[in-house]
Length: 132
Image (cartoon, rainbow, N blue to C red; front, side, top):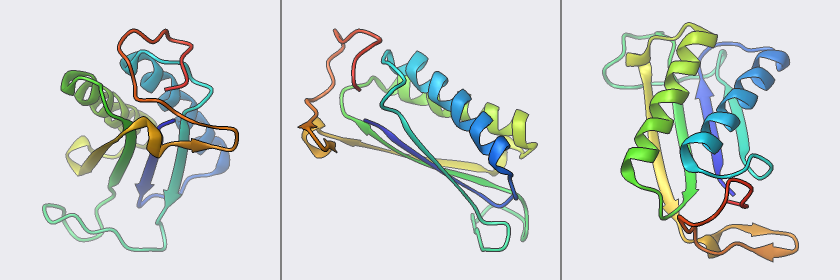
């Protein structure tokens, strides 16, 4: 059950957040060969907050992605997903891709808890309807 947490400096309305989350959920499922029903996406806007990334000009718009995923995916899968998410943020939010940063953290399946179960580690043989 991945958690994809985005933080951005721009102000977004609820519809824009939903559109982005829907697109990113599909991208995750495509790149990670899994289903969509378990993908958690949160979007925090910091229009009135603070965001600093060393290489950016002060007050430049930016996006940060923290992706907590189950271990086992190839680096190329992870990289392709991050780039696709960044391209989507650029297209939907007009933020330059150079102003984006991501951290992907892999966890064993046992670190993902639902009310009625604990997940197993990811297996490349899972189908696209798997529970990540």
